[in-house]
View 1 (cartoon, rainbow, N blue to C red):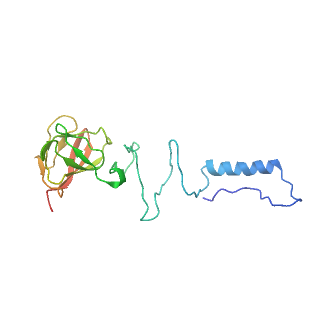
View 2: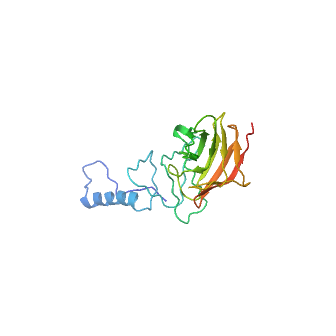
View 3: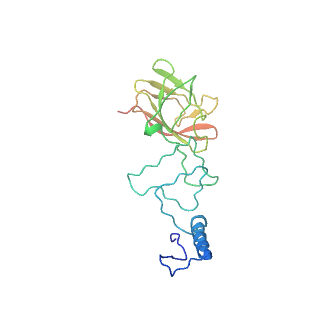
Length: 199
């Protein structure tokens, strides 16, 4: 598409007579150019004070050094959309937050979290709350034990949002090199990957 343009061009000089109709036409050209969906715009930055809807194919960034930040607590896919993985981000400035287990339940605040025992340096984890993250099916979560902590992820312990592990048995991690990768669906967390304490 072309950029917005105006119909009439004016220049300095006493011989030029500017008609109101021509000025109004130019204003109409500009209004149509930014609101009719038929022109391209090239601007330095956009701040949307309200809701923003982007239709059609969308490209975010044009260089490897570009940064895309999503500050929302929840990312919601449109019903029926495909190839959407609702990973809801890390902590501020790209840091990995540390989250403490409470009565067997973890309440993660990002898609990647360090897990810390509630007391001492070992703990069991039975459930994962979605109170602070997306509850959409397909939400992914990577959990890493805090260095020096032993976390036992319990298989199918019941309650709200339990964990289901692929081997059907508990998953014990004792090192921050160990990981557990989960995906959410049908009010449960399903293991889809992970590594056991490799350094």
